[in-house]
Amino acid sequence: MEAIYGMNNNRIVNAYNHLEEFILVILFSVMVLVTFGQVVMRFVFNNSLSWADEFARFLFVWLTWLGVSIGQKTGEHIKITMLVDKVPFRIAHIINIFADIIVIIICIVTINYSAIMTKMMLGSNYVSLHFSYAWGYAAIPISCTLMILRILPSINNSIKNLKAGPQASNAKEGIE
Image 1 (spheres, rainbow, N blue to C red):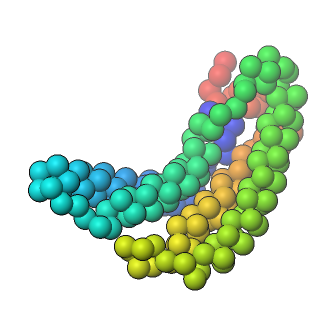
Image 2: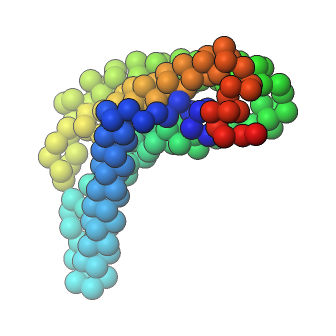
């Protein structure tokens, strides 16, 4: 699996992986605590926090979009592998490269339009949080950029596997 998705043991990459996972855990924990606090305030104290719903949504947006990068890292994005699993080694890697290039193109288009939306939102603020909507919209171009950075090693790895052939690829993965 690692050979397919271009993961390596580079210290910088590992540090980034841990940082990304740490940030996601923090965002998720804060979102759960804020949401739980809001439920307690509403049903126990019959009062609510004016900012909790908006803040939980803001955290959810960031959590979701940053999760896209981790999904790419672990190879858990939806792919129809039925075809790729049944074709020869060389064709499978060519299909993977082609699919990765399509995803990069989609990410570039998404970055372009989300950057425009982010700039448009600079003047609008969350009502109860008192900061710009642009901070929420910024999650999209940032995560798409991170996803492109995750895809590039995958393409590079597929190209190396194509050059090395199926025997070398199987030996690297420990397949006999």
